[in-house]
Image (cartoon, rainbow, N blue to C red; front, side, top):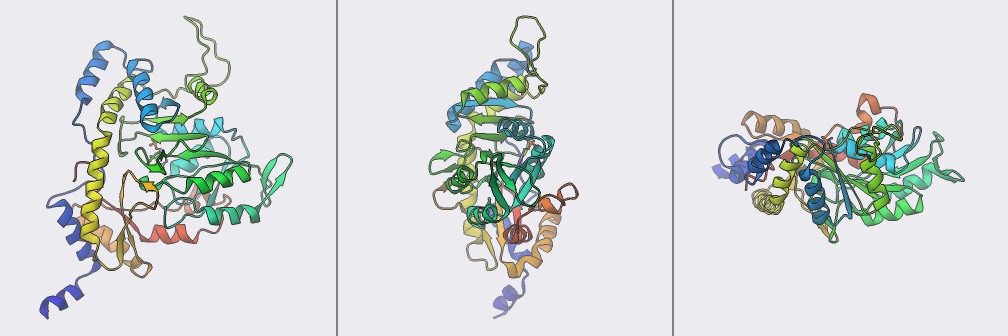
Length: 393
Ligand SMILES: *Cc1c(COP(=O)(O)O)cnc(C)c1O
């Protein structure tokens, strides 16, 4: 009786701590620490000894080739970070000054920033609870309602701006509904560009995320599943776009033995050889990282399966998630406890984080076009990311 009463009285925060401890043991735990247990040191030493530490070198070519093999993309262009990869991918998708790009309200700020760097505006839309990515059903309704077809493309009725591209993101590694989104992109003449920054190793119906759209962007920031310190990549099946991406990110320099001839304003966005060396060593361990993250998911699933009011996010049908960030979703009735849970766990050294502030709520994006986003608003109130590193399982 006494035990039952205590259990009844223990707060949700206490129960979350007990479940996390059951999986993670004692001590402190970061949200996502990188793991360097392969050839990192030897490749980096070799890279330094060769003197080729900067923007040319064999590791860049090797990293691009290995990423192409892994993802099944025909071509890969490695760049300095994921945001730069998005910026160049959108430019290649013909996004121009004054255009709008469909972006989920529920994503990291970099997705929208890349749009802004081109002088275009993000146009925010809602997400689905099943995938945590853009909800295709709501998107189609919204586009039918808010846009019109003109001789110069699909335009936002209210702003008059051309809506040029659709930029979904695979949240925390969970693939969004790409088949439905590709159909919408086709019907509304939008170029599909995927923000696959969080989803290296994630598949939908056997196709790697980032390879369904015309272009995709990957990130190798320090907190991602594979890190190059900082880095990113543009992936595509189109040789012409890949060649142009390489050219633009290499200061638009025309190939020549010694002459400095640049045929447009390019960018210095190439990934240095030093970072690519780290990336090659990391990529060799990706299958191990993925297996380890899956074991961690199983362990969390066991620990949280009987807990009322909170659920571990699992992959949707036909999806294979990389489980980059493990995600608890509170029931709406428990959402008010989110901050107490986050505070309690962090005070105990168990690093947890809320989801992002919705982008239309941020000062720089508060006046951008925005569809009704009730699910994004609900998700952001209810989500807690918990320790997820590949070294934990
Ligand atoms: C990490 C990330 C990026 C790119 O980040 P960089 O730090 O520039 O590599 C873009 N979009 C999302 C959703 C991300 O999580």
